[in-house]
Amino acid sequence: MEAIKFLEPYLAAYGVTALFVLVYLESLGAPLPGETAIIAASALAAEGQLSLPYLLVAIFAGAVLGDSTGYGIGRIGGHRVLSRYGPYFKLTAERLEKLEALFRSRGVYIVMTARFVVLLRQLSGILAGSVRMSWWQFLPANVAGAAAWTLVWGAGPYLSVHLLQPPLKSWSL
Image (cartoon, rainbow, N blue to C red):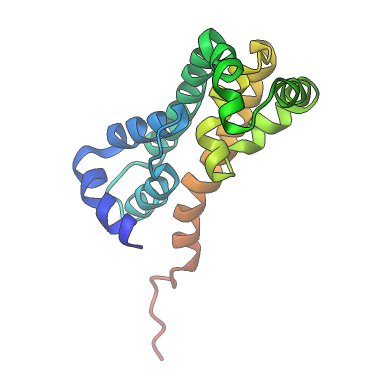
């Protein structure tokens, strides 16, 4: 609750641009409260302070572009980094091979559902690129996962506020 109160003034002042940047950076790998910001922004949209369609576009675009940038970074140098420094974190060559095999067989599902898991949300793009997941598999999975996540956390709180409000008519006898 404190995080939402902290974020609301920034979202109210800078709107969906701030939300786009926050979601982009979180999807790129930065440990930021993207999901919390989305819930706060959705609440502001329910109060009429932000536009829901712009909000949803900003969330979706930030998520897809952030993960795609992370994928590119991972694809360029991630495998070398994992091979060289992985053993310091118990990621041996054998475990790296197993991780690559896992992404070859189930990478699409991992990327799609990663949005809903806190640490995996930040690392899925970089990790997918680092283990050399095909771009043509990564991109549709990234788009599908971002769309589902956007609707659940962007539209979900907005709709629940509107569905839980009592009707505006007053009944008089």
